[in-house]
Image (cartoon, rainbow over all chains, first blue to last red; front, side, top):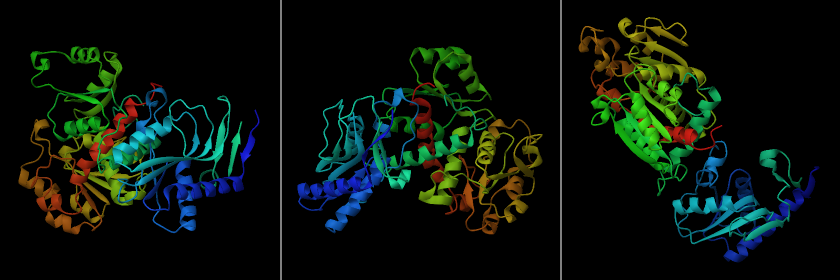
Length: 175
Length: 314
């Protein structure tokens, strides 16, 4: 099957800019916001969102990374996964609004793991979810608050997100 | 990787991967909830046929931080003192559903027997066997060295070119053997210093240099000096005239400490014989990594248990 391009570089930038405005609107400003990216590509997206938010409304938006490997429900079904670093901004997440950031929302199991990981780190005031692509096929009652692009797909298809910082190229393709 | 029996079988990238996982495990110690759910529902048996405090407690803390259930089994006060064989003990543990067995045994090779015999279908971790190997100690030593040298940028790095001098009772030391293999695999240059009576008959085939002169080794300015405990419990002959003479010739006293470069790390696997192989000043100085080694031991053992027990058996 051939890969079909769904989002180009400019589309990704536009989607992230729109998500940033939506985040600021729903949060009524940038106070007490923490963006936590889920490795690997979610971390890059969280950093980009952080920069855009700062450009729109200079404030104290902090960015970190949240590794969910240890909280996955499929550890026993796959070869051992190496965890990635977690970095929580100084001051912790207690009482803050945490925005989880990931590239693709699919079954929802990664986000379930992320919610469990968060509850071991503290008690945020609220948790929201921002994703670049929502491809459907949820297996858990989880939905995203901010979506770059809804992409109805068949379970046999693969969605590939490539980002400049990691892959040296920028695109979302479906194959 | 199904078992961890020796560091000699560890490939370089495997060893670095374990150290990297340990970096992530170390962060857990600073959190409010010091627990990860990764091994929930699994059972780890600590099977100790020899006395130990730090290793057993360290493995216990590591398993509990990963949410595994821990059963401590020591030979004293068990059916082993009634003459039960290793085979029967292993089969009993297998019947109770152990997922991993952490074994310390006075006989070299006991963990290998457990791993190969088919008596028990569990991951085996060698926590020290006779005078053979103590792989998690070597891993935590490598981890400690890497962290001191590179700090938070340690991930993915090896120990290429780091000079390590191991001093003392090499003959009886499983810590020394495991370190020789692991540190060389990671690219460090290892040298051994000991009285001739406490060196193995031959170190041919070991990737090390050996000498008898600690003063020359100190003046060479190694990056790491690792002092070993004099293991009187394994000594069946007089290996040196007396403690004072040993201390004078091969102990890390205040005068030798002062001659070492300021950046040299002083390591000791513990328990220490203060005043014999290491002076109190050396043990308590800021160059000493003794307490870091204990703290890092938990992270390394978490990484090993996670690596062996998560994932499918492939």
